Length: 174
Image (cartoon, rainbow, N blue to C red; front, side, top):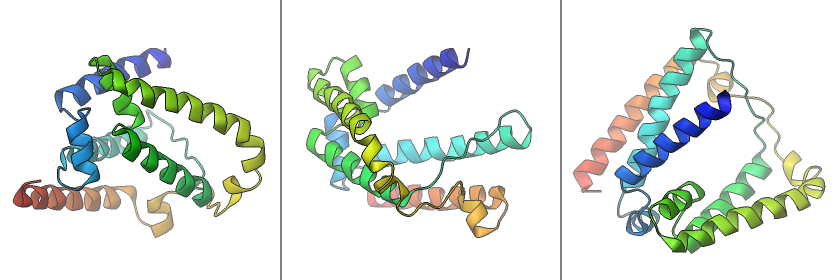
């Protein structure tokens, strides 16, 4: 049943990506050049709303959190590869699928790249499991846990920061 929930929410998210025009190449390029913050505003809105929903469901006992380990080596290297791929293609993995759904055939290169990258990761996993994926292992930690504060304080601070950032973007015409 949870796979169906994932499918339904994925389709809804794709619909919202398309309606917000964040799968368009010019928006992607604008975000990379820091000239168009449409994608940043869309994704930050998603994170802020999701942050409230997840913590509310957790506090109500309706969900269990599965905290992944924070490994700096893997996160930094993965982030660099993600950024390089995004800059080279003009789509991130999620927007590649959305752009293909909209009929943009150039997004096939991104999807092909994701598949090749996944295969290369699977082949390299035995070697990097004992090297890169152990560098800077912080364990299963969260930001509120690191700071020693209640998660709702971080949610409130994130919302205040997000609203300030949105306001600044609007003032700058971004």
